[in-house]
Every structure is written in structure tokens, then in C-alpha cells.
Length: 88
Picture 1 (tube, one colour):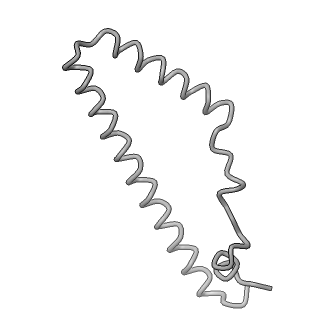
Picture 2 (cartoon, helix red, strand yellow):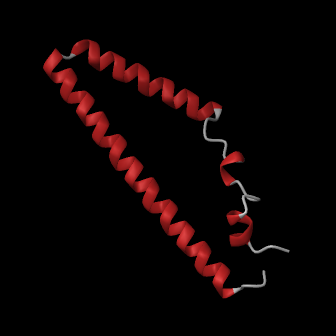
């Protein structure tokens, strides 16, 4: 039996295939967010709209950074766990 790390390395574990990221609940939330963004963009001046878009970019970048840090931390914990139990 392969260890988890070996199975990941050989592509036998593909966690992203089982990840249901776009559930109905998430779709509804995304729709509400888009509706709110559209509302505000219609009300804002061109200059304020550009500023709003830069704000959105900042939110996106910070969320992406946070997800990367969480993934890295989880992967490190998993690797540490696998090294503690090499025959599992």
C-alpha cells in the first residue's frame, strides 16, 4: 500500500476532483454579490467605479494569498504527519 505522499506524487490522489466548490448555495451567494456590485457600479461616477474595481482586486489578491497560506500550512502538516508514520 502506498503512503499518502507517494500516492499524491504518482497522481493517484486528486483531491481537486472531489472538491465541490460551486454548490447551489455558493452560486446563490455569487449571484447576490454580482447583483450588488452591478448596483453600486451603476450609481458611482467613472472615477469612483475605477476605485471600486481596484478595491475588488485587493480583496481578490488577499483572498488568494490567504488560500495559498492555508494550503501550504495544510500540506506541511500532512507531510509532517506522513513522516511520523512512514508505513501508513
